[in-house]
Picture 1 (tube, rainbow, N blue to C red):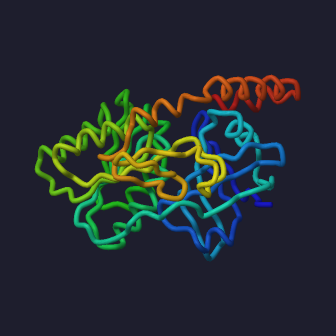
Picture 2: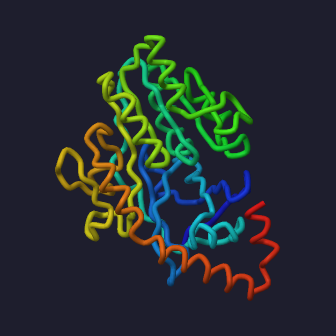
Length: 289
């Protein structure tokens, strides 16, 4: 059992959690993730570790209430317990002295990119972080990213905060200015990561993306998280989650992500109906703002 120490709603459907998990916190590294199960009948979902404190024994992560389990988790409170937290899983990000590294975080990818940016900066790199979101209220961890990075650019779809446009617009400007970018790391929606890889490919800038396919056990046994890289089948949970963005088969991965949409929608709708029956309508309404 893992106790939720803090929980805060940052924006509609956006939540911060501080979890007591000392054994995991002692071993966690930037780029890794955990798989959680809320209770005995719950599904297993992967969550990227946004921060970890081996002294306090805590993990920090951010969750967006979009599916059944994340919605259920959003109704939990500080003091509640999560049944299972397995990790740290996946390979950690490569932290070395590369020179100038551009880190692109889209939406919740910002939470995942945060510990990587901090570690790369501490290793002596110039880190340029590009944070993107639909609106100002969905830009998370800006203060933390400014502390963790050499430079930070913020962009929103509607221009409500920072520049208006996409993260690739800022990355293109840096490339056009002949910024000597030695490495790019991008984490966020799959379409965004594909756009980043397409942009950097002709410039031959090494680009690494954190893949987020369907995942169940996190040990490579179920095969659900398979990704084709350079024509070879890989498992994101044990071979990744980071892969060479120029070698990923995005078309195949995008198609696989659509596989269980009907079942996911049905599960969420049933949970909303059951929750309404338990007179928690006000709580659910607050989640959606």
